[in-house]
Length: 427
Image 1 (cartoon, one colour):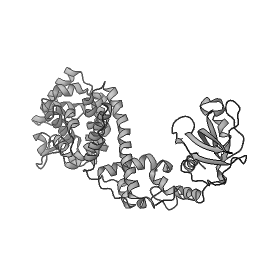
Image 2 (cartoon, helix red, strand yellow; image 1 turned 120 degrees about the vertical axis):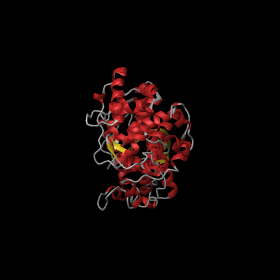
Image 3 (cartoon, helix red, strand yellow; image 1 turned 180 degrees about the vertical axis):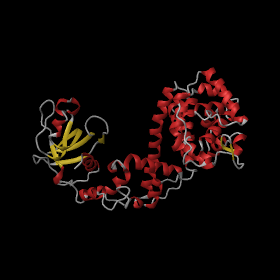
Image 4 (cartoon, one colour; image 1 turned 30 degrees about the horizontal axis):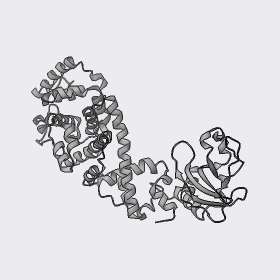
């Protein structure tokens, strides 16, 4: 037995309501279960319960055993003096408030609604389940319930990311351009080089980028040099040697320290994702967009963001993927698929966090944008689709990632709309 199940049973009245009595056989009539409190203090506020024909208004505290009241030292806490009913699975002793007045107790185990325990056990039974607890039922959940839950999950994911963005903002002394720069670098690095690119952002103050963004070769020398990609003595082409010379100048001018930066990897990456290409594209982006943050904040439709983030690496990279090694000519342009990743993982979270910071609501605009982007393809999203979910856009795929990581893997089924629906005996 877990306390969260008792919370669920009380909240949704999944117990025998007729002939309900306290441990001392006093009749109980639940008029209002109260408001579920997820913070410190009693579990339910402002409940109304009639006990032995006397109407009581106050709080409800829930425990597995009555003795947990004393184990948690509630008898010494005045916040619990307004508890009007102690709801427990097992009543093993009498409990008292700080003024020594006894609190009526409801022992639930004799009043549980038929089937609720079996439904609960079936939900958490790991036999014949390969992915999540509700995998055999989630595809049958009412579409309206599921759609509303997934949208809520998407904004929950944005809220979580906004906390991380606020930390970056504080570290940068409220420089939103620095926050964008750091966030873009992480996502330009993708999974393989995300950490290395973040270390580059931490070692290069954005004020330096501001000063150099009028010259693309200067930005390239900064990014490549700080990332330890200009340290070879074997490359002799003019472009590479010029970047080396520029970087030696920048080190002295700005007192740069590349030792703090991790060297990015090339291993197992497709050539178009090589760190050389991604850093060259980033240099082009900051060279061509002098007010990138303002442009992104102002963009209210998807096409505007596509136009902003559609850039190509400099001409040297048309015939190279790495320094000194020629390849078949191809323009190294940011693809729609890559831009989608940037929008989903960087741009929209920053737009959300900035609007929130400014006391505005960008929710409708953000939903309008992400709803036009195709769903992501990864093993988690594919599993949910296998179990019957029709995920049409990146909003839904982001939502199920939040669902899986924050609820499914942590067995928080009773805090999930799907788990609630199943335990309520619907769908």
